[in-house]
Amino acid sequence: MLYHLLYPLRDLIGGFNVFRYISFRTIWATLTALSLALLLAPWFIRKLQEMQMGQHIRELGPQSHQAKAGTPTMGGALILFAVTVSSLLWGDLRNFYLWLALGVTLGFGAIGFADDYLKKVAKRNEGGLSARAKFLLQVLVGLMGAVALYLHPGYNTQLAVPFFKFVTPDLGWGYVPLAVFILVGTSNAVNLTDGLDGLAAGPVLIASATYLIFAYLAGNIKTAAYLQIFHVAGVGELTVFCGAIAGAVMGFLWYNAYPAQVFMGDTGSLSLGGALGVVALATKHEILLVVVGGIFVVEALSVIMQVGYFKATHGRRIFRMAPLHHHFELKGWAEPKVIVRFWIIAVILALLAFSTLKLR
Image 1 (cartoon, rainbow, N blue to C red):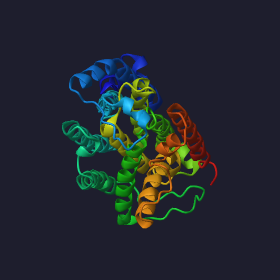
Image 2 (tube, rainbow, N blue to C red):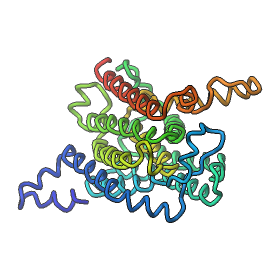
Image 3 (cartoon, rainbow, N blue to C red):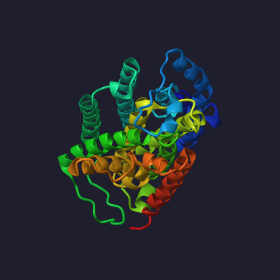
Image 4 (cartoon, rainbow, N blue to C red):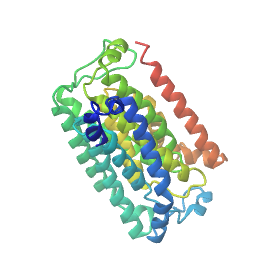
C-alpha cells in the first residue's frame, strides 16, 4: 500500500525512490510486523485470558507440562494479523505471489482457528475439528493454492534437485499433487513441533529468514543465472512476505519463549507451516524445504514411526513418547535445553541449505 502511495511521488520527493527496492521494503516489513506483535501482545494476551482461551494439557504428556494449563492459546491470530498488515503495507499489491502466499497462509490459519475455538468450547485437546475434517480442509486449501500456481502464466512445473544442476524433471500436471502434499505436510509438521515453549517459533523464524534470501535470489534474473537456479519473475516480492513472517514471529517469541505467556495454537502453527510451504513452492526450492525445515520433518517422522511401530508390534514403542521433543523430555532433558538445541540444529540445517546454492 505504501509502495503504491509513495513511490509514484519519487519525482517530487527523491527520497521516495527507495520504495522501489525490495530490500528496503523487506527491512521495514520486518520491523513493522515485529513492532505490531510486540506492542499488541500484552493487550491480546489479556483478551485471551478474559475469553478463557486457556490451553488444556493432556494427562498423558510429561507431568511438568501440567503447570502450563490455562496459558492463553490462539496467539497465532496475532502473528497472522501482523504478517497480513505488514505485507499489505510494504508489498506490491499487484504481485500474484504475494496474494497467493497470503491466501494460503490465511486459509490454513482459518482451519487452525476453527480447531482452536472448538477445543476451547470442548475444554479438551481432542475436542477440536475431527482429524478427517481438518485433513480434508487442509487438502482443499492446498489444492486451491497448487492449482493457482500451476495455472499462473510463466510458472514452470520443473523440480529443482539440490546438487544436480541438470536434473530438473518436468512433472506437468503431477506437480499439483506434489504441491498439495508439501503444503499439507509442512502445515502439519509445524503443528506437531509446536509442543514446547518457543520450539516451533524458533525454527519458523530461521526458515522464514532462509527463504527470504531464496526468494530474493530467485526473483533476480542475474543472481538466479549466476547461481544456476530457477528464475521466477515476480517471486522476489515474497522477500517482503518472509520478512513480515520473521518480524511477527520474533515479536511473538518475546512472549512465547520459556516460560511462555501465550501459545500460538493451531491458528499459528498450521498457518505458518502453510506459509513456508507456499514460499518453497513459489521460489522453486521445494526439495530444500526438507533441509531447511528438517526439525519439522523429523518431528513428523517420529510420530509416523511411533504410530506405525506401535500398531505393527501391538503396543511396543520406538520412542518414549512422540513427537520427538517429548522423548528427550522424558529422558531427563530440561525443556529449555530441548528448545535451544533444536534451534541450533535449525540454524545448522539452514546453513547446509545455503551451501547447496554453490554445490551444483
